[in-house]
Image (cartoon, rainbow, N blue to C red; front, top):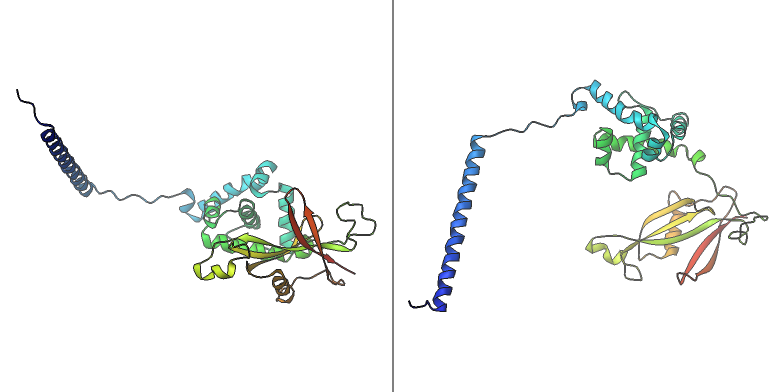
Length: 283
């Protein structure tokens, strides 16, 4: 029996592959058509997802109370995990916001819930949508309560914000005893940002990175007392400092003191860098 040439065998194999591919395409088309017919004949409208707190006002209030109560009344461990403070500190803060900050609850939310919502958002850096799900509130309500508590907290600034104390003559701290009458340190730092194409020139610093220049002042114990963000990375530190001193809410020093600036160069051997820091003094 004669043997089939190799070229003819290749043609036969190619033809078989094409036929097989066409058959599979036809089968898939038939399956899709059948699925479409089944979907038309068996139309099922999905029911909306309902929760317990969506039924009535009483059930919504009950669900919110059951959600908040373990957090602020259960145990100090749960309160610390969610609000970053124990129960005694939480209720002291609520009392201060009520008496000094003039914060009040309403018929839909208690003062404790509003403060817990504020602390939960700050503690976990959560977005509005995540806070909505946890506290069973709308996005508008979450945003409004957050700003209400924030304004009340700002009214307590004379209690919560401690004024910096100067380095005294008898200071024994090896790091600060050389800087007599110093209130703190002032310096600028750069944070990388993403901006549009039209703003890239303004935000590009001298090293070629897209950054924003942020001015910050801190006390001896590394507590920030002032911060000015928003300047472009190309802006000089002197320009940012002039803006901080001349804007509507300027950088201020304790009453009765005046500012003088002392620039010192600090060498960090381990990182092999130099830092120029501005120290704030009073006389």
